[in-house]
Image (cartoon, rainbow, N blue to C red):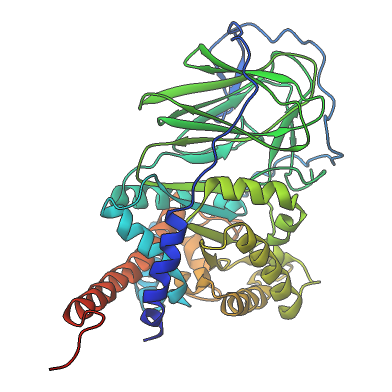
Length: 484
């Protein structure tokens, strides 16, 4: 079968990935500064650790990029009450469709073989360090319900590698990761969000936080033993102090030629609160944090509300390439399409061409990583006649499917798993999708996460069986043997 035909060569490819070395960061070390009390606003939107205000009383101007205003966050509408019997019937119907969707396979599943080989060797203890998964996408991804479920599933089966990469501080109201706690003081400027595109220098996840003021800080509270700060080194860049659980550990200068900067910090396993505080009136731009354990899987949520796939083509390519190479991912997931469906200027051909350009850019940064596309869910729109399914989703799904075939990427048809075109209404009635007929509830996202994981593990089991057969055949017929 096609899925297994590439197995032997894929093993060699994945071996090359496993042996790739991660460079060690260099920093300009200076004497440690004393910790100052700061007032944070956390990922939950509430102040953390009551303390004095930062000494700077004036608000920071936008530091390094021209940006547009961001619209106020829209509150999702609430629909009319649903009778209990009708909701129960819809609930059962959703689970029936998801279960039936098990017959819809991952398309181009052979592309997953290098990733599966790494998982297998990791389980055997044959490769060091965590196996890393990067999941890019829009608000479905950013909510971290869907991705959080996938993270839990992978880590339960293959070990907890830590939270991996998360954005620095609190780049927008409502930003969260379910497995970490983050926060920042007030005078940071966020670039990279939809409506706030600036110079494109945003790092791995397409979002940066900048300030020019002293005593501004961000923090990450997470479990791990290997931590890393991703930032921008730039001419005239300011100095920052790094703290671990309130203790100063390093003073870093971000001054230098413009390029990505990295600071790596190894410590004892367990819970840590890492803080970065600016020390002077000079520009500092941060991209994100990494928190890892020595082994296991990381599942890294890189979603931006309102994002379309084409937004990634606006990110500074050398910076993105450096950050991706630094993470050395084994699997990269691209989950876009919901927001593109609202546009009328895309055609199947133009959208496919754009997606293939994006895949090419990612593959140039991570040539041995597996790439999987996840198609958009069903989406409805409210018209004068009522709610109707959006026809444009058909075009998006077809274009992504073609792009996956052309670039040898795996493809998972989310809408088909939901039940196909028009299925969103049943999910809304069942209480598994919001009344906006676009987003899901926490329960709905977890159902989708379980479905993705189930399908991937079904293919992984098939891979293990095929691999065992190939190894057995090799043992029975060693190279160079002759017939008697």
